[in-house]
View (spheres, rainbow, N blue to C red):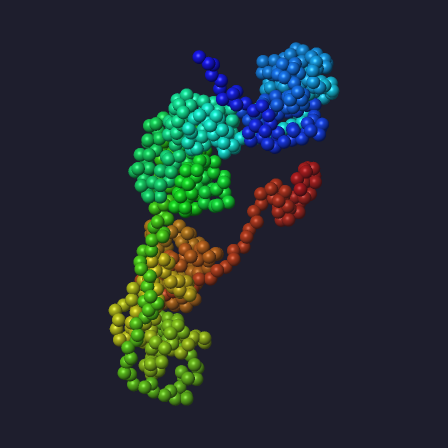
Length: 624
């Protein structure tokens, strides 16, 4: 039986051209040798299995003219030392004694010290002088996976070469080369999965390849690699995103249960899902597709699923599983934690679908307009004499209950019923005259009724006096159907106050007002902010129907306007005045500077009593 040689040894590169994924190192070394510009102390550092020792051996052959010397002659000039087992001062002293002798053949003696970070502190110190000023025929090549453990005085004496992790594509390409040499029919996805499992180490990838060939023979498939190497399949991740997009949370939870039953750790699933969402985001842009380190068929699946998913969903999924990655180890119920993350995906998709579906069909422009107002056969208005008080003053005489409402209706739609009203229908002696210099001409009682309909959330039945459905009511109805905010009136202050009602308008005094407010604030539904406001100040009585209250800011104003819906009707009934209303004013409260530091308190007290300065000087304190 012929002895088996592992692929890592069998296919070890014998020249710089065969080294995989380290062209930035090999090209530099070759040019240094050609130009006779090679340093006498080199440090090769990087992760395991990337070719540090291999490059050191190739370099040793190149600088000694490997083409002209056989293996036995080269062996006399190349010395390898394992620092992990030879890390004492005595070992380094024996090495220094050997360095003094010139090579028997060739030009240079090359000393390769592997895992040099394992040397003790004393061994490093003993090695310093020789490493800084070696003989002309000696070259030292140090190799390590942990550069940070080497003392700075050693690093400063070496020319450092940093080896990088080998990419998945480079490893998969090399595995394809080895499979062809070995006569193995391997699927590209299987080789990519092995390369990804190797985590940038070519030696690990070759070891995994040998293991798979031992199991499968000359036919290597993706399913075999997933099952034998215990790898969480890409299909689980694709199925997870698909079920989330379908808002199918029962099958999603069953899928995660299947992952756990196959022996995979929940944290592996979380890390894999985070990477999967990252790859889906990468696949959305043509310029970043090359960052996907997967096989051709898997790449097509990524491209397909990324197009079927929204960017917001992919970002949300990446955020969810990135947070789960940090919380998993600390969770007392890790399974519930992961299941909650999966449900967050479903909930996000559900909300997105609700937003994308309109609740009602769009309406035409005609639906927003009020019906045509039927013409009424009314007699022509009588001419107003020149000496009429109304014409002379050009003012509107009306009760406070409808004056402002009439002005709004007339300015918004002057042609509704204002021109058809007769001036002689107005009362000659109104109860409470009020002048409004900038208000438009008075409208008829029909216009006043229609104005009230503008404020109603649902329009009253169409009557000859109402003028049909108002535009405000139509907009408010539409906003309710579409779940959108209602139309906001111009003056929030006026809309917040209840409408004036018909009834007595009794005169009240401040004591009666205080008693009524005191009873009101004791009710349970009154907010704490309103209770504090009404307890701190008594509204000022401007006239028998108007109360004035001072507010500090817009937030307080908003609370009070909301409370007026309950407060004003209560006060009208309690005080027997159904025309009662509030007038609000905003005042800036004076900011009182508080004293915190001892120096600030001392200065404040000294300003009030100058004897305090004399006292401080007498007792000689350092407080100022």
